[in-house]
Length: 366
Image (cartoon, rainbow, N blue to C red):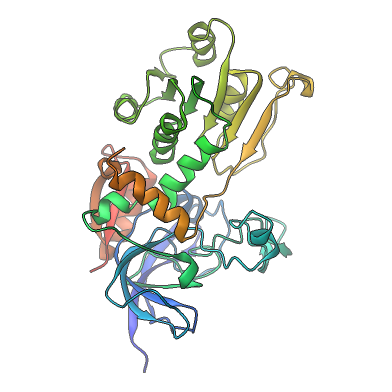
């Protein structure tokens, strides 16, 4: 009889529960990683609510920090007992999409996608953990294509410091990278949850000299100051678009980053732009978006709208950990709570209802 592990599984909309599942079997190109720390993401909440479809019984979660327990026979350059992370996006790098320069999409999985249940290549197929295969909110996770996806953790970095790398930091930084930021630019970042905070930090690294952050939570706006914001705007206390226009003397922002995934934030991110500005969209949208014709200048404003799925792979993870090791930012400050895996249902309740000043929760299986 095979060994069993504890895992948080999707049961039905509104229910993610702890269950026993068989220990994953390691293939030649895989690695079995014992999870030491993982976390809950806003996308997991979309899954919980049934807004993003996954298979019933799937282990959720996509942010692994852990120790290699067992290596597949073809995996070289790693050792059992080594501390590692893997990106939330773990493509195999052999697909057409990967070799065409978009490895996060990895269109190599035929799945039912969308509300219609149609079959086709899922646009987020590079995202496997907690989407197409069992994820990381468990005692162990099987990392596919391990040689391409495992990244050793530098000595001196804690689990909490690197916990943002697999998804939150990589996604937030991608938002800044996709915003066409130049030295001296003004950038507006909408929503200062964990991804928005990382987008703020990324905008600073990219060379923006005026970073305006927008949120309705003064505590989060305060953290954004620590990560590089120059001006903070509480949208409950002002008209954000008017304030941005005043701050830019009517020019508009060079770029905006939308990190929430709602119609109102998307629209505001478009309205603050200068002609020719870039809107970098990071939000996971659960309903159709409408582009207002006036804000879009009827399509004549030379605007650019870029979207991104979290870049993965070991080189991306190495670069992100370099930023942390160099002391540019301490993202461990985002970890506001810690729960045992046994208490995952309570952790979801806290995180999904955004109580007690929660930003990120460290989930400890062992």
